[in-house]
Image (cartoon, rainbow, N blue to C red; front, side, top):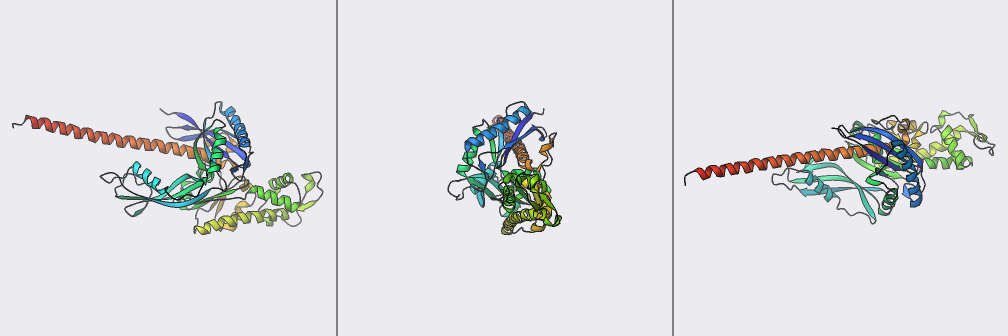
Length: 423
């Protein structure tokens, strides 16, 4: 009998805080989004908490709006973590298989992953994720799932993602004070990838870029595994700042110009096309070339893409990702951004909208909701994996108990026949 339950994803961003609530059918793991809400963020700067009281207030406002839509309290959530304090490193773990018959079990996999965590972490950092890339059994490399295989030596290569302890604790403290229990802390860009990328893209090789307000995040996938993650302290708000400086106008006027006429390709406009700044602020009297505005935007976006491409060069994937670049986040709404990405990365590029999510809420299908929706997908997949592992463990226990029963039955029968024989 199928059972429906709610799962929530809380995206604590620098500009806005978003929550997505979905209903999960446990029989087929089908996900249906029933509520989504967002409020302006306060107390967050570049993904880091700068005022716990303001963050608590913002999250509470966001939760209240979602609870009114759902019609019941929201008690648990998967929470996204981001910010420039995140770093990644690679690590290997090695163990000897524990069973006498050398069959690899779930316990062996857990032990080898735990062994990979025993690395020297930087001071004041804590591990958020230990992501297995691949396993090897007795030097047979490239194994995705070793459970059930036979071998003596089990190794794993992992990607370890760490966050500054103080910032992680500040975020969790702010969430707990709203009455929410945290199911899991998830690196935001990994959650984004869950909603925007297909398994085929991850297998071929792809980079997902989330252009947020004050940060830009990158995650690179190949053969279904995470190769690298990176977070830049530059985002769409810096484009607004550049326009404000270049045109000598207020940030509000610069933001309005960006949203109305923002274009990442200057050649789209001819030199004679102009806008009247008075349309945005009565105190302004100047006329500004649209081409000049576009050149300002292009310069900043080229800088962001150049910094990200350097990361691809480090991992030897610059210009070598067949599935290309997937752009998402509020900054990806700029006109011409896809064409600019194609030119700068020398790869195919496309916008990344949340996929494979059933809902009647239109705003879910928006670039800004890719992380919040991805957190729900992440939670759904994690719950499904736990159920599969439980079933697999239950089956192993059943077979072990069955073998034990027949062994005891045969031993008892043999002893009974032996007792009937003349001595």
